[in-house]
Every structure is written in C-alpha cells, then in structure tokens.
Image (cartoon, rainbow, N blue to C red; front, side, top):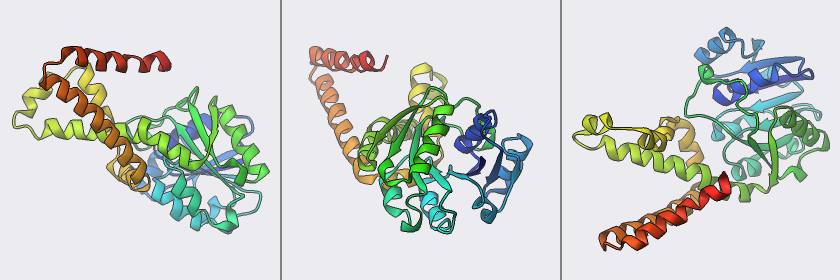
Length: 276
C-alpha cells in the first residue's frame, strides 16, 4: 500500500522509519507545512519524497501526525478522498476530533492514540521502534468502515503495538490523568524553579528526581496548548483531584503528622504494584 504521513516530526517521522521495513508498504510520502521539516525528512530518509496535499489524497492510507487542532482542519480538507482510503489520526485527544469528522469521510476515519513519545520534537527526534511494545487506543471503531478498521489494526499489529478499544470520551478522561495532567505539573515544576532568584544555584543541584519530573516541560507548548484546550474539562478535574492530594500531604507536614505523611507515601508506592 502507498502511505502518506502528514506531519514529519517525532511521531510521524518515527512512524515512517518503522513502516519502511514492512513488506506491505510500497511507498511512504510526506507532507509538512514546515519547509525545514520537509528538508530534514528527505535528508534523514524518513520518507521517499515530499508531496503536495492533493497528492496525499491519492494514497491508500493517510496518517495525521500533527497537533490536534490541525487534525480537525486537515480532515475538512480531505472530504473528497476515495471511499477506499483509510485516514488515521494520532492525536492525544479524541472526543473533539471524532465529533468534528465530516460525515462524508466518517467511514474512512480511524481515531487512534499511540501511547508513546518523547519530550523531543521535529524530524531529528524520530526513532525507529518508538511504537514497538507500546499501547495504541482505537476509539469508536464501530463507526469506521470495515476496510479502514481492518487496515488500521493490521498496521498497528505490524508495529508491535498492544491494541485497546474504547469510546473517545472515556479515552480523554483517562488520558487527562496519565498524560495531560503530568505535563501540566511538569511545566509548573519547571516554572516554580525558574521564578526563583537563585535558580542557577538550585539547578546546579538537579539530579535524577528533578530531571525526571521536569523532563516533560521540554515538550512543545504549541502542541500541548491545543491538547489542553481540547480536553479542558477532564484536565481541570484531574488537576483539582491532584491539588486535593497535594493539600492533604501539605497539611500533614504542617501539623507534624508524620504517620499521615508516611501513609500517604506508602499509598503512592502501591501504584507500581500495578505498573511493574
């Protein structure tokens, strides 16, 4: 099959690198509004060539690896694709995107969220194998065409991904807790330190813990602003619940209630009984 990837940054570039090794892929072409990204994608051999948006429409599969607001705009420009075309978005939010798909291409569309990535961006951040052994969430698949559903599942299986199925609203609430809220917290941790007068001295002491917690603050503000906007209500709920937990710990420390402090931390330890 001929595959087009719109957006040649970390997600799109990494996808291209992994798909190039698959026997069922005849060609991979790319489209990106950023000319520097286009040039880098060719130099790094992420795609076979850069094409126009109209040429993208001739491909069998079109991946949308762009910010979530851009996904909605792109979908409205793809209303004239063939009924046999499969359009797959990789956005971090799903409900608003699913609700915005033009009726003409609803059967063409598959809403997917690969739960993977790094804090880096651009074509140079592309990593072969980024998707392997990671989870991909496929949303509202019953509204996609049979061909499109089968095609998407085949591609993600070939990438070595673990498939989960759920409704878009359910996905967005879950993602608020395990992805969107952690990004908001990471930005806040970074800003807390950066607003101190002696920030350089503080950062000189930065070790693994701080670096791990602030790593996500390197993520693209442009991309994450869109994600926060699209998932505002779920994100606010997650932040409010986090604030409540932090307030309980703060009060225990204020009151010298060290047993409560210990119990709070011990409860937190239990998370990794599930994750590990």
